Length: 141
Image 1 (cartoon, rainbow, N blue to C red):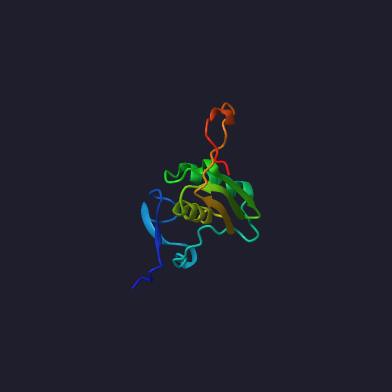
Image 2: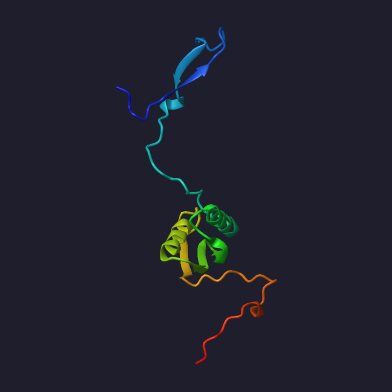
């Protein structure tokens, strides 16, 4: 019976080569090597490696820009030593939580400080619009 991690590789050898093997031969890997046990080490780097803050920020900003559920125009992302700081405003609590989850999924993000406010979405002002353009009566009190 074969162990579940034992595997072999088929290598082509030219007919009549000095190996003395047929044109196609199945050989065990060197030293009876086996496939490592099933593990998930995705996202880990070599010892001492830390992903640059700029790279973390760029990936998070790209993810937010591509996500159709999120309007990131009022969100600011800052990364320092792998810690992500989210500031700005979003329209719903669900969006606030979703953005935090997206940030935690970015490789290299060690902690997320979510300071997003809900319900006070203020878009960046347009230089061609001034306060005088809005004829709104202000409450007196």
